[in-house]
Structure formats: C-alpha cells, structure tokens
Length: 274
Image 1 (cartoon, rainbow, N blue to C red):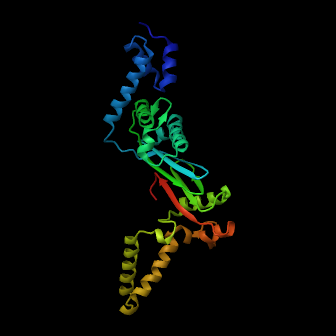
Image 2 (image 1 turned 135 degrees about the vertical axis):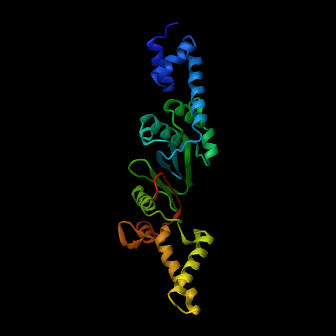
Image 3 (image 1 turned 90 degrees about the horizontal axis):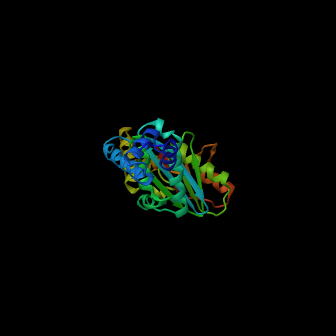
C-alpha cells in the first residue's frame, strides 16, 4: 500500500527518526504505526550493538539543583556534531529532569527510570537509532546537602555541583564555589578527605626531594610536612586561593559570606582533558 506523507510525519514526530526510515518502516508494515515504531526501535538496538566497540568521547554535560539535592548527567556520543544536536541535548535534559524528580542515587537506578513510556536506557538506544552513533550515560553524580549549588561551563562539556553545610545559602555564593571547582579541579573538599595513599605519596616525594637537595636526614620529615601543606593549599578546595581574590582562601570567602559555612562535598564531570 502507498504510504501517506501524513503518516510519515506522524511517525517521525512519535519517534524522532528520519523521514526515509519512517517511510521504509511504514511500507514494511503496510502503514501500521505501532508495528513501524517497533521496527524503528529494533533498528536502534541493532545500531547500538554494532557501535559497542566505538569510542564515545564527545557529549553533553548538564547539572541541576533543588533544595537538598543536586545532580550532574553526562550523555556521551562519538562526535561533536551530534553532541550539539538539539535532540541529543534535549535527551540529556530529559534524563537530568527524571533524575532530579526521583532523587536518583546511582547510575543503575537512573537507567531504569521512565521518560514517558520508555526507560532512560531505552531512550538512549532509541537515540542511537536516529543518529547511528554510539551513545552512553558517561557519568551520573549527585549530592545531598542542606544547600547544593551548580555550575555549567559554556559548551556543555564541564559541570560541577557543590554541597554546603547551611540551608538557604545565596545561590551566587554557591555558584562561586562551584566555579572554583570547575576552574581549579581540587582533589578533595577538606584535607581530611584526601586519600591516605596520596598523602603518603606526597610525603615520600617531599622527603626524596629534600634528600636530593642535601638536607640533613633529621629534618626530612619536617620539610616533607611543610611541602604537604603547600600541596593541600593547591589541591584541597577549602584551602585553595579563592579564584576572585588570592588574598582569601575558599574557606575564608565562605566564612565571610555565612559564618561557619563549609563545603561538605563536590562533584566535577569534564569531557575535556584537564
């Protein structure tokens, strides 16, 4: 039977598939819309299986916050062309929205949540069928804290979220710290959060450098501790120089805005090399 342009447009609106794919699916099913949708979805699954060995290094990274909760979603694809496509960006937004609505805690939980009548995992597979590129949920991060702030860097390749210890913190204050995380890439919020193996490695390096400089063995540990303090200042968020005023640490900046305000944790997702 002949396939009408109205049916092709209807199927395209329902699936987002290309005009020729819709025409072909309708011709194969004699105009049965439901059967045509299933063909298009199976095509997406077939394309996804074929692209498994491909590298997905581009994508879209977005964040969102609400009282007590914040999240970052990174949806990855193969090319920047697809990453900038409105349908791909919208899918990233849809995934982030369902994560926020359900306070999703893990990637596994998020992948099983529903967007309309499809799970997140199925929606990603459907999008693969439209573009022919490998796609995957490259990262999902979330924070629960009295206040959570976020920052999305221009270009949708980098996003951060930061948890703060007090409720109702001015959004501008939280954004400043989230921007600090984006720019300075700290390894921990507080020095107590730095992994023990990293601390030991830095102390070892400090002692070895001091020894190479000819310092007496008796003071190597003291020198190493001093250099560890410098390492903390460079890599621990609360001890870093505040990016807008080097005379202040991030801890001092926060305390000047809200007495006793501190960072509980942060998350940073970057598709580009740091």
